[in-house]
Image 1 (spheres, rainbow, N blue to C red):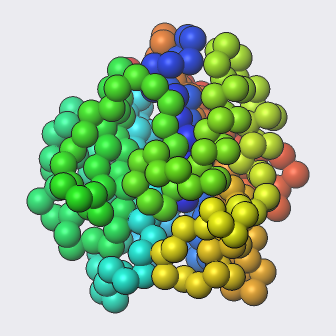
Image 2: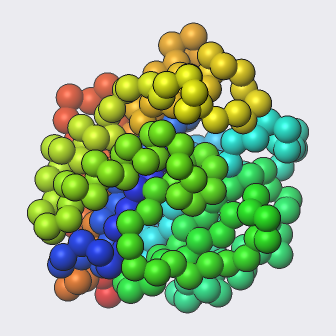
Length: 255
C-alpha cells in the first residue's frame, strides 16, 4: 500500500476501521482480493511477481499491511520482496509483538518498509527506516501512513486522516464517503512536497491520495476498506482501478 489511514479502537463498535490505497505499475500482474488457494486461511490481494501481499487478513481476524518507504538514496538494487513480510504474520497464529520480532532480525536485507500487524485488540508497527528500528505497540487512536514513517505529516496523509476521522467518528461506516476520500486526486502545494529523490515532477504527481501517472503507467491500483467490529465481524471490500463500483466483498466472523 502507499496510503493507509486507520482507527484503532477509536471508532464506536469497531476494533479496527482501515482505508487504504495500493499504488503500483499498472502492468504488474496482480490477483484480486480473495481467499488464497494455497493457503485458504488468508484473504488478500496478491502480487503475482513476488507472491506476497500489501494488505490481508486471516480467519482468526489477524491482519497485516505494508507500505514502501520512498528514499532513492538508500534503495538497494537487489533485495527480497517486501510483500513477503505480511505473510509471516498471516500464516501463523502469532502475537503482534512476536510477529514483528520475527521480522526484525532480517529487516536490513529489505528496501525501506513500514509494516503494520494487528489482531482483535492490538496493533504493532515496525519500520526498518526508523532511527532506532524496534517493534512498537500502538495506543488507541487514529493513524496515517504513506511512504515515510507512521504519522509523518505529508499533505495527503494529514488531509486524508482528517477526512477519515470525521467520516467514522460516530461509528457509521459510510463506504461511499470513504471510497471518495481514497479517490481524491488533489495535488499538494509545491511548498509541502517531500524530497525523496525522485524529482519535482514525480513528487508532485505522487502527492495525491489517488495517483495517476500516465507517462509511466503507474497509479492507484486498488482502494480497500477493512473493518473489524467488536463482535468479531470482519468486512473487507476492494475497488479496482477502472471498475464502476467496488468489485469484491467478503464478510466473516473471526474465530
